[in-house]
Image (tube, rainbow, N blue to C red; front, top):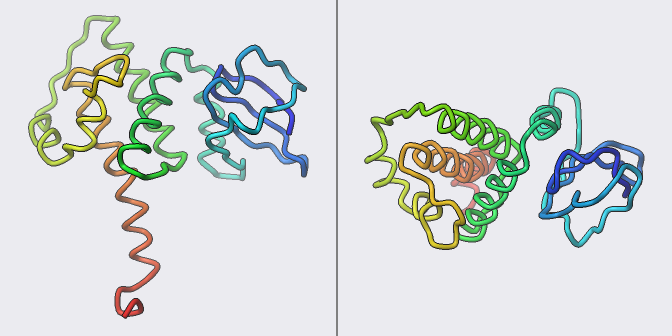
Length: 175
């Protein structure tokens, strides 16, 4: 597997053995790498196959312009969430978090403060997701205005897969 384009330290466009394009994510996978370099397979955390009308195309477009600090924040949040929630997230969570974190950082730099009327409810009902964001292991602890939507994204990302699995396998078949 060879690098086709480095988007940032954690995201690269790669050419698979069958010559198809894939997006490969992993901590440091693109660090000091250039087009044509081999990919260290031990660093791969996620792989997205690019297909027509797929979220991998959107992922490619977003991560291409995403600043490194934002990409690092997304990876840290998802890595922590996957560990604590014992769940693997799909590409749509990476997209949604990238969009949310980018604009949250932009608003903070511009001095724009938003309030979220659901902050108390999200903190109460999505407790596991909330504590991921305020835990000591997170380098940047997120204020409630930023963490509320992130909690919702993490909760929806993990519960949708469980829900869709239930849709595919009716409970009467499990008896």
